[in-house]
Length: 88
Image (cartoon, rainbow, N blue to C red):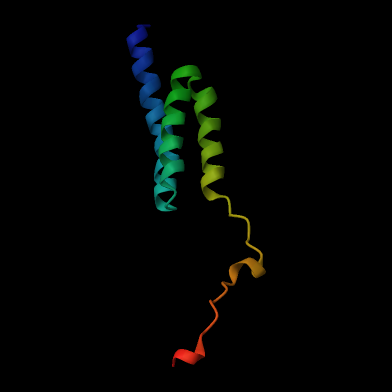
């Protein structure tokens, strides 16, 4: 097997697997995780092939689809500035 063919195959498989978190992240409007997931899968595929790129894809999908922690109710209310009624 030619080394160039193996590298090109790893790049192609990494790009295909990396497209999964890229598309999901773009749909969920988490662009940073989408781009990071794509390049992480690409790099992982070059290093160890599918053995590392598939778990990397799963990790980024978990990060994209996890629900954010809920904010306590007392922190969601904003404080209005005091009103000065003497100027009216």
